[in-house]
Amino acid sequence: MSAIKKNIFDLTKKELEEFLKNENIKLFRINQIWNWLYVKGATSFFEMNNLPNDLKRFLDNTFSISLLKVNESYLSEDGTRKWLFKLRDGKEIETVFIPEGKRGTICVSSQVGCSLSCSFCHTGTMKLVRNLALEEILGQIVTVKFFLEDWKKKTEEKVVTNIVYMGMGEPLLNYNNVVKSINILCDTEGLAISKRKITLSTSGIVNKIKDFQRDTDVNLAVSLHAAFDNIRNELVPINKKWPIATLIKELLDYNYLERKKRITFEYIMLDGVNDSLKDAKELIKIIGPLKSKVNLIPFNPWPNSSYNVSSSEKIEKFKKFILENGKIIATIRNPRGDDILAACGQLKSLNKKISRV
Picture 1: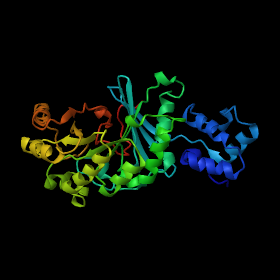
Picture 2 (picture 1 turned 90 degrees about the vertical axis):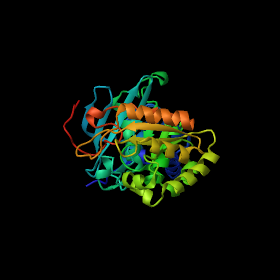
Picture 3 (picture 1 turned 30 degrees about the horizontal axis):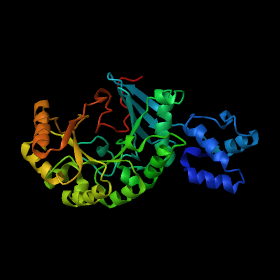
Picture 4 (picture 1 turned 45 degrees about the vertical axis):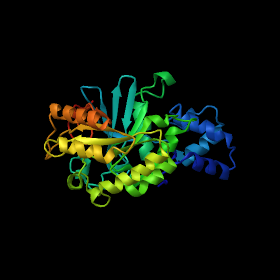
């Protein structure tokens, strides 16, 4: 039985360079290979027509160019698409594409399951199975672009413009592979996605925020969801380890170093839980010293969830209070893909029969 070949998407540019160097292959070939993989979307080494035939054969004998296997795909009434991907070991993850005018966003998963058990989140009902490998994180983007036929389009016509690490799992708990993937996405000789168009969302893994600031230059979003510790302990249990004051202190340091960037605070709107003007007043108090904005997220129900969404009137009132009394930018996220369980907080590797395409 032949050994399984390593997926070339599991290599960073530096690792590929080291491999070529050790095989006495001229290093200018790395940019040619990289261009085929991340600009032209090649799915075979034999497509790489500016490489010599012996190098094509060598690469083909050594590596695979493997897309993710699609178990199911779903199409929402609003154009949002969701894929259920089956990984090599049989585990499953979900990835979402959200089209919105000239912007097209891929929502990427970083783990199979999640260890944080946020009570409002569908993924939180799963146990953490494992971290995703680099090839599985990049594979989501490469495969989605393949299905959207994005590789064939001219730069100005491409539909994938933004990447958000807001899918299944906590990105900062799969730190090394997530950072590697970000660096590959930003490589100007490859996918060349602007750092301004990449956002990582964390529940508040305080001991990784300085590392994140040092190792990347992309946007940071924090899943705050409550202004009081007793409420956040229930909604985001990691708060018991790193309470709000500790998180905010770390973010003040981050804000000082990243003066040009606003931190986005994500705040889910749950009826009777965290949506009062008392909550809004406390929110202004704790985030007021930071350069930030608030993204209010109407709760997206999922099977057997115990929460209800705040009324639209209450959400508007909450937003207005923050804006007028705290002078803090506040927006309301428009739910996308909720009819196929693709909206914020609804992802789970669940083979559910809904609006399949």
